[in-house]
Structure formats: structure tokens, C-alpha cells
Image 1 (cartoon, rainbow, N blue to C red):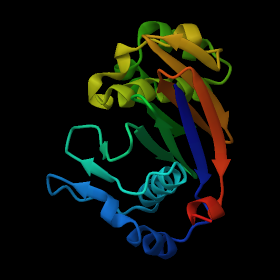
Image 2 (cartoon, rainbow, N blue to C red; image 1 turned 180 degrees about the vertical axis):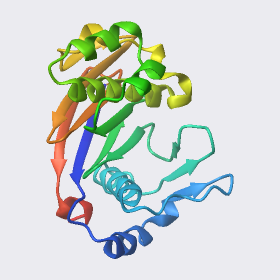
Image 3 (spheres, rainbow, N blue to C red; image 1 turned 180 degrees about the horizontal axis):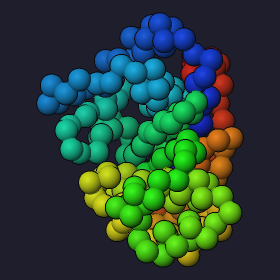
Length: 212
């Protein structure tokens, strides 16, 4: 089994050009409960990146169905699974042949109140003892969200359910029945939760997004 992850720097993209590009592939994305699909630049680029990646995998006919409270479902994707995340200047798409979760988090200041609600005692102690509290705070958050997005529960599934304090120094590890990979990219942390034995990560550019 294999998981592929694609990272795109979106800082140079203009909103109107993104909207024009999305209009070309918008029919692939369906909301089954009248939920409005987000039209924010980062959200649209995530969908465009997914579409271009599927096309390069030979998947031409597919639909992504959004339903409130549930993980988006890829139909017609040859048994492929996906996940999208965005934060700051980056959009991230993960594609796998089994359920996958990914998350990217721009590093922001450590918030003890947020940590108390969402981190276990061991994780909070680890953060407090760290020389760079902001860094560890966000690294753990990205790992937590990646597994909650893999399971489809989202944040409502409970960030404090998972304790990653023992793996804070690792880039790749296995826990809770999944394989994890976490890496710092500029001023953000990206994390992947999957079951595949092989993981490939690449940064893509404007030509990739345009399908060129």
C-alpha cells in the first residue's frame, strides 16, 4: 500500500484566477445536504490540487460528496481515499489506497488554556518544559488532527483522546494502529496519519495545478 502527499505554496495565487480555475472542475464537488462549499482561496486550491492529482493518477470521472458532520467521500476514484488540509501559505492533499488523514498547521503562539482543554497532562508538561513552546504545541496539534481526520471524527472526536508526548522527537513512527509522519515546513507543521507501508511527499508548483 502507498500514500502520496502533495504540498502547494498558495501565497502567489490571486483569488479571481483561483475562482476561474475552480469553475472548470466544480462539477466534481457535490454537497448532498445543501451545505455551501467554501469559496475561500485556500479551500478552492485544495480541491483543484486534489482534482489535478486524481487526473494524473488516471482518474477522470469522479465526484466528491460533502455531507455535514461526515468525512467527504470520493466516488469513482478506483478505491482511492483522500484528505485535504490548509493553513497559512500551504495547501496539502493526501491520497492513499486506504483511509488517510492529513493536517498542516501554521505555527502560532502557545495557548495554555487551549492546551488544557485539548492536551493530556503529559503533553502539557512536555510543552511547558520545551525551549520552544510554540513549536511543540503546534507539532502535537497537527498529529492529533491528522488521526481525527483519518477516522473521520474531526475535532469533535476529542483532541485529548490521543497522547503523542512519547513521539515528540520523532519524524516517523507508529501508534494507535496507524503510521504517522510529521515534518516542519517553513513556519508550519504537516502531519500524515495512514496505514500504508510507503509514503511519498512532494512539493508541487503552478504548472502542476494547471494540469500542465
